[in-house]
Image (cartoon, rainbow, N blue to C red; front, side, top):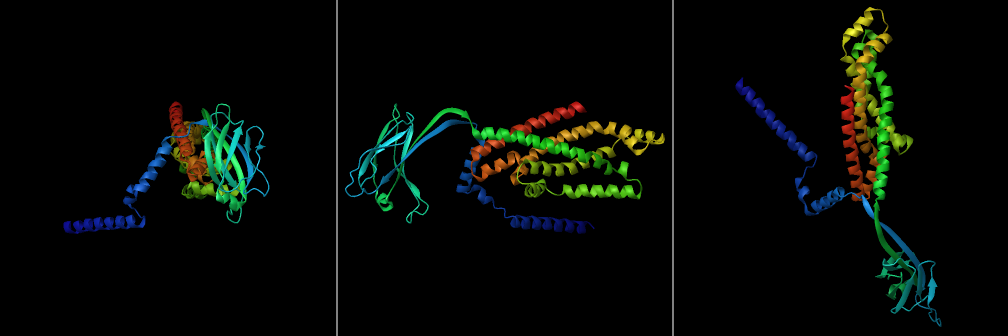
Length: 382
């Protein structure tokens, strides 16, 4: 007998090793990828960006002026200096010969700003998508003026000329990042999204929970059938991920917070319904039996014997689930459920990880605050 058990243990161990080895191969676990130099460097850059959210940014501004320059000049045409623009102005010849250099001058730009001069090409057979070519860079002086010598390259002759663009760029005082403002707006939307979903779900889950409570409903064939039907419905819907439900509603009513409210409402109804029904099943049967003995009907028993015992636990579960819904709503937003989640997905898709870090830290702050508040509220009502 002892030898038989030993062989069973050996077989069980070998079977477990085989299952894990097969699982390792099926899911493609490859620890070497974690330490590949390029992958590790990329991961380091992403984590660094997430840890440095975009909170404050310098005020940025630009000024642009463009002028057409023909290459080459028409025969017999002597280039003369022309004035282009209102406000910021450019002074330059309207045409030039390839291989030469022209002097351009500008006035009215922001003082002490970086200035880029580039050629802008329209779409052509040689350049189907158009393009641009840097011609030079300088800085404006204290009066907003600049002078720059620009070379007329052979490509300009092939294209028959191009537009010369002068762009002044500058950075001013620090200000609150637009990403932070957008994040705060969407976090408020996320909190109210979770609040509305929890409120709507509570209104549906509370009456259904009585039907799913064995001590209230499971009396007689009809009551037992209702009890098992509601319980089965709760279990079936609870097995469906909120992400799937959110994707369905996003297709149905369109992307946005309304789809997120509907998805979270469905998920919260079944979760609260199950929790509420379990609370009802654990009530003290004494008051119920006493009222039943006096001839009270079912509604009177629920009103005066059941509800006083379940009010505080119900409130605790409602507050707790509001906290949970704030966390879930971030994930639901990834499939179009509105709130901060959808914007976070867009920033990640655009590899704008500093802005994504702003959203992530905002979620962390709000979830932490809500966890503390909900814990204090649950303690207060006990």
